[in-house]
Length: 132
Ligand SMILES: [Zn+2]
Image 1 (tube, rainbow, N blue to C red):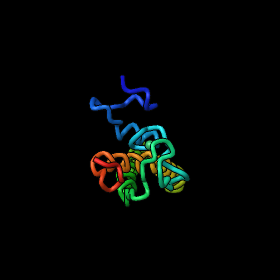
Image 2: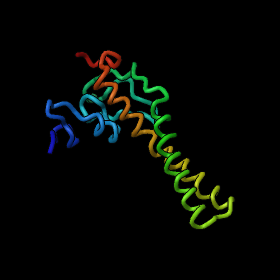
Image 3: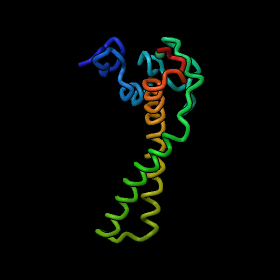
């Protein structure tokens, strides 16, 4: 399975925590136990468990770009299928798809931001103060 000491079942063969598991759980990319967020999208400056300095992390617009692509494909694709199959009136499309797009975007924001930070930690540790 994995290394359950880390609280996640996704340690790699080298003993490192999977950035996907840490990201989707919103945990520290090094230890997998400390929470990565102090608010909805505010990243803690330092992991409360292992002390990893996260103050220099910068996921930029990366999470939003992925969310636009994923949610846009899902919502617009579903709207097109429904329109062709059922010919909904425009007001019903607006009532259904706009809130759905908003909710999906907000729901994906934290896991995608945490996953990108974890991937940056894995591949560019010099920018996150994680050492070699
Ligand atoms: Zn940590």
